[in-house]
Length: 71
Image 1 (cartoon, rainbow, N blue to C red):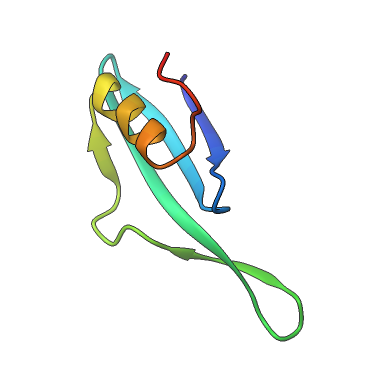
Image 2: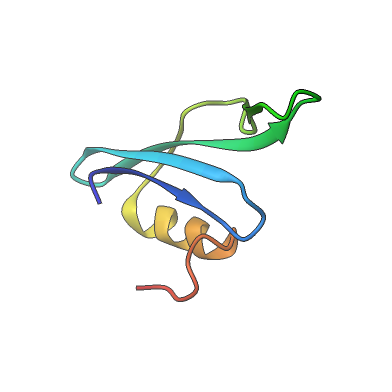
């Protein structure tokens, strides 16, 4: 996992990047539909970017329903 995007079961979007050997930075967005049916993404985590090591990051993905099983 170097860089990517995931969507969980609640349609939250997580964009992540592997910054170094064991540091992952990520942002979480919530898609909102406006009156004109345009989708805009609202940043959820205000203290961006969140930084975690690999194990913490994988556990977060599992807890927030981005993964069905922990690899």
